[in-house]
Length: 140
Image (cartoon, rainbow, N blue to C red; front, side, top):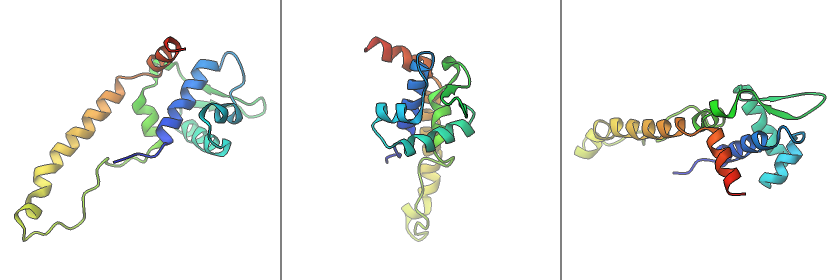
């Protein structure tokens, strides 16, 4: 299983805004230089983050800003802002009901898969943008 890079790019964007918003104007060009992707990719993800209510993009004067303190923004919030709201694991459509495994696969796996997703989300809830910012500063 692999997610798209939207989540890591969104997290990179959020960290840059948190790190530099008081020092310079945070534009898509500025962010794209840090992330090393096309500014269009950054603008698309910034738009998604803005619609999710975690960043504000100021028209005219320009620049992106956090809409709330970094201590209040979690990885889960960033993840949910940019990834589709659907289960992590997709079950194959038609297991064979005549096979003992096919007949029972849902009852055997469904609860466990839900627990795995729940555990991942709980871990993501416990990591804030502020913690990532502090870790970034320590490694500079």
